[in-house]
Length: 286
Image (cartoon, rainbow, N blue to C red; front, side, top):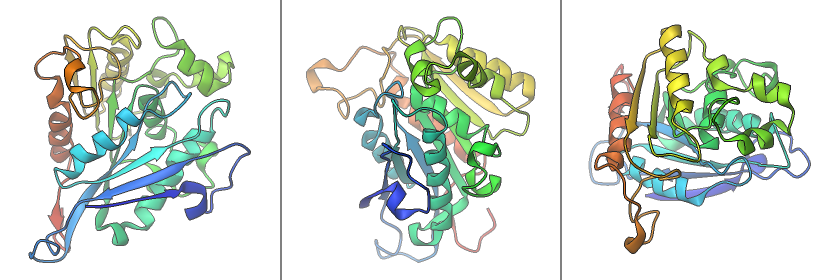
């Protein structure tokens, strides 16, 4: 596996706002040619957006998740985006630029640019949701075309999604700069649109930091808009589980979770496969 990392602003033409710091890391699994097989294999790609309440980017939801995808043949990219005191649209612009960079360099990465998903955790799930709904908004129109910015599928992992009621108010304060009107605008259930990409959601019923109503309300909006989606609400598990195993927790303190929580990434990848994102040979119509 090849692993590289770079300053997002240095490898792109994106103008850096004062105080912004964003790093894009990529994890590229061995291809068939590396293993003595035939060349020309194209892989799907996933952009991973860690959580952290828009205050920081959680390492627990970065490389460990990338490794699960590369183990299944995907190219994985992790964006450590700018957080508070910088607010909207800084992180959205960085996520949009990451998508454009990945697609424009698809040949170098050995990926199919039309099979590029985005997934996010907690506040990163909110960022992922705005990327999947605001890809043609004025805030990102100078970065690339809507088709370059728009993910082909979304994965929302215990997302901070709605700005009202039982939610994670601190995340919305950070992303909105405490602007209540902007926070209301950024509530994901209001941003869902009929032309959205297929979306996979998962949450735990026990999550007392970001209540599962966040995912439920987005799911209702997706259903009403006619957007293909799948959702898993697991009975038990704390917030911030990531892969929910020894990759992210000390071996003697892995939290108690429902038995199938650790299968979420397999379920997500299967859903993405069903939507047309899979490994295929170059020149073969997918």
